[in-house]
Image 1: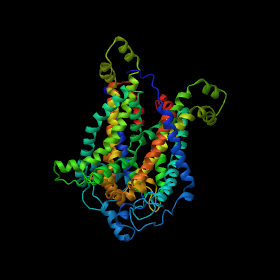
Image 2: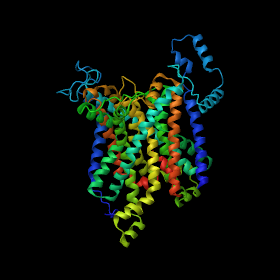
Image 3: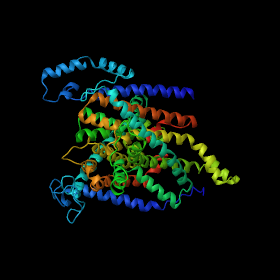
Image 4: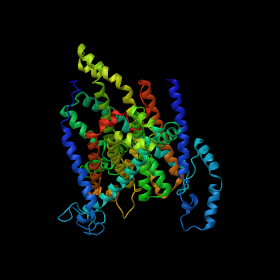
Length: 320
Length: 278
């Protein structure tokens, strides 16, 4: 058990290193280099050369990679090309906003999805389950921007309850923060709930067909107890796994949702940086998103393994 | 209450016909688009941005006063052709490598598997953003990106399906009969895995549509004047605050197509994929 966790943690560290190399290479392969991109195509040869020296681009790639990596570990994330401010400063506030969005979504969506999935599994095959299954399948195949747009139309345009755009500044009070968060959270909750509920239903419905459930039925155990105790205990591992995987999914979800609502989060920062080709910022954001994702998948694997030694971690990862 | 084993899904027929209908309509619109558009997709039909629907301009006008329906029809071809090409490439790459890895094993399998693991353990949209930041956005970059990203998942499934077969007697017989690996791959193994792979193709294509639409929605996919459905949502998003439905229609097109592909697989193919644990 411990050796499995140790092995997975080591694998994840190697993976994170590989990710950092990929992110670094990804930003190296562009035609021209950072200095060229930063100054635009009309820059003089001398200016480009000067900036290249200033940024240390004359050094070999592996040396720059190592100093970049060491800098990141020490909290020095480099400097933005467009705003000339330290990347770490730009990240900190945005990171908190995105974290808040993901946290609130998780706290709302997970219990909701588990209950919904359980109810569907218990009524498996009935009209309620069939219609809910179709709705849940439909929602999980729907792009976030449709759900987000419909939410804006309903709550911001028709009912005029909430702003269509999420205003959020460092000094925002509770009510303003709640108003800014409501629509983005609602959108993410709908998508995440649909996905978790669908998988929960599959897991529990499958458990309920197992021989031990039949045995319990024959012994006369009340069905509420069968579902609540016998089935649920066996489902804890796979369910924890699915929840962790869906939190990893949030990494992709927030990118689109932050754009719909102009939410001042990390994804918005990254997209602006991609458009402006502000590579130090792109690198930093990509690294944070990938690390979060990789670590959540590690957590998912460990949780699944803790409860079920036969579980195949690879198969679970494939579902994303 | 617990009689789950006897699950009867009478809903199947209805959802199957729905998905076939939607996919058929999409294919026809993509093929015959240029002949059925009511207006030129680049022509200004009204002076009014986000004009209300009226006779002749059935879905209203877009943010520049162009006919939204015509742009939607025009975008169908872009969206579906890009997704189709990306999915075909992903499957060509993933199926060949996956079956090869299953057949060969050893270091070939180990190397390809590790590369696939690496791709699968990264969030796709973030990989997309980094690539677009580095290479800029063009149809070629987006399609290749989607093809490579999804090939990893296809590889996993093809490899799992292939591994189940490799140990079987008829493959051993084929080997001892002196059949070459290429021949075994295509005449012995492929017929057995074609059906689950076809189901995977449909689901993968829905992923590709969502992925590319999301990139376009973020302004990092297909660039104007070319517009796919995701791009149409983006360019008209500003109308939402004024109550315009202009961004809703293309978003609905994406959702309905993606749902149709999912329902198709749900009805015909999912059991097979689940059986393989892939």
